[in-house]
Length: 285
Image 1 (cartoon, rainbow, N blue to C red):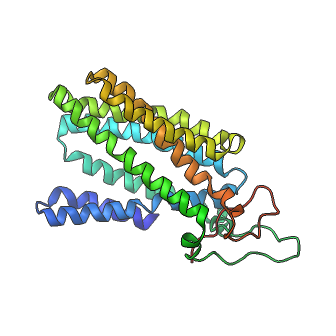
Image 2 (image 1 turned 180 degrees about the vertical axis):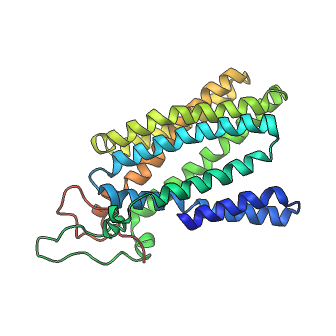
Image 3 (image 1 turned 135 degrees about the vertical axis):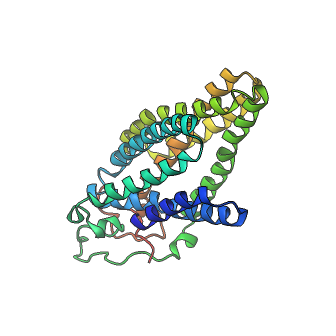
């Protein structure tokens, strides 16, 4: 995580100094590739600290703080950009990346059980053996339930990722002067609503089950897509955008909290099936 945060910091600091498309694209690619490290790394650290029993609830708490921070960061970025120009946003992002490094270093190494963090067993099986070897990458392409889940997630994000930019275009067409401000309102409002949704999903994932929550998120996405074309009124568009808080939030929390039950899927290491709750898929070598 520290290496990824350093890469994001470097990309943010370099971007304002570059004026060639190829270099700008390269810094953005570096930042995006580095940013993809954070979610699985944080999930692994969380699992190693709290264990599988508290994993879903703690993941919900993590994401609640994440979205609260996103809302505050967006508000600060908007305010500072208004007074000091858009370039200040890049310096702000770099400062936040450095703060994330400090937060990571503050975690005591002894607090993380690295075996559990990798999805390995934390107790012996009934016959006395331990599952102390991680699963290979092969399980990702040979386990049918995981493949179905992966395809569903990809299709879901193909639909969800395009909606906010399209809303931004409609807002700009309605009022060019307020388009950017309304777009910011959409983002901040959705992030604020995501905070209680994250807490709720984290607390209830083990009670209600992951599938009903995930199915609800998929259904809300379809409803959201159907409601947008009904009106070009900015208040209507912003109100419908609030549904975005429940859609990706529920799906993301289910995706991460699904890990502790995925070992019960045929084709994945099954040494932990006899225990309750089951352990997550072993990390790929």
